[in-house]
Image (tube, rainbow, N blue to C red; front, side):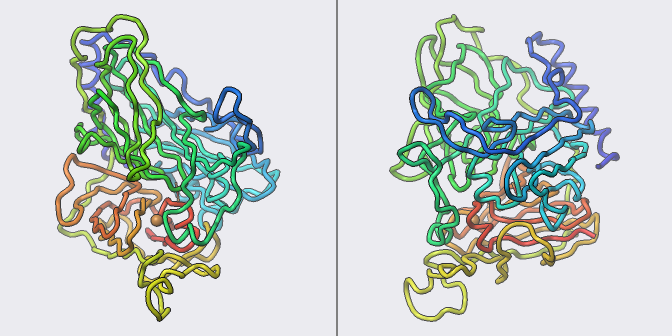
Length: 478
Ligand code: C2O
Ligand code: CU
């Protein structure tokens, strides 16, 4: 997509090869297990055992019969063909979240492609320009389709990876299950939609409730965290460990330890960490989600096997991932646009008069609960979505996103990665790029990017209920 910047990447990659050779760390080459061209993804109902053991099975909708769906292993700069077969009884599409691909492959029904009808299929063909951790999910009836299990991870392998002992993925999903183990009904509950969205009661790791994940003392793991939840925000804490964040939303950043040791992971976000297993053989260490006050729970435990430590000292190897070929926005000449997020319970949005709760009752009658710049685009992708702003291709753009609501919103832009410049007036360190920016209540965040990918691109909150009830807009790149 940006051939002119590839030279830059190769130079860095060469440096990485150099270091990789010096350290003879055994690494199964990811590329060797790349997804075959013509990989098939069949969306269909099935039953899976989410809680494991003697817990009942759950009716889900899934790709190829598993939750999460098959891991798509792609290679940076190499074309792929991914075939999606719709065996559901409703329309679907697949959105390859975070991958900077051509607009016609973006998977938004009505906007970038016709919906895939039941019994039909669609071939997605693109060449991923960036290495990193991404994921895929439907963009039709998203709240229910994602909530019933349709999602999976994408790993785009670097041409030259950094040395680690193991490359792991934790695909985290939040479910709302009944006593009988079935997915609770009530998708699209209006009260919930105007508040935090559909937060569930069961979190799975790679498709099952996890008691423990086995590790070996001394090893260094690259751990790719994906939050595939509808609405649950996570703040992960690794007891007894010091994770180093090396990439956010697939894009490498300057390696750093997270503030307060908490890895903040909004819905749709990915964070790659390097984790040196400095614990003791035979011991267990909790991985705790501390996000909701008073509702901490254990996601899993790092369970050290009895093997002696792999090495006396932590691996002395570079932590910097090779940067992706992202065009740097020119802040001085960037055009500035404001995106103000409005609505939700306890808000003063809308024309409704009257005090207190009445203000918060927006959306209860089937109307919108949220808006961006006063306009509520409802539902999912559909035909006739008019862009809120249009950019000339190649322009640097700065978006000032203001969260006027009292709720959290992970704001996702399709087709581009955004350089995160500042939050509430303070510069954001570590050269971070994101495709999904988590906004706390009242946050003001400045992001910038080069509008280099032509087409109509969705920008929306990734709390699915929020998107469906109005927190969505479209940006056009001409
Ligand atoms: Cu992951 Cu428009 O979505
Ligand atoms: Cu939101």
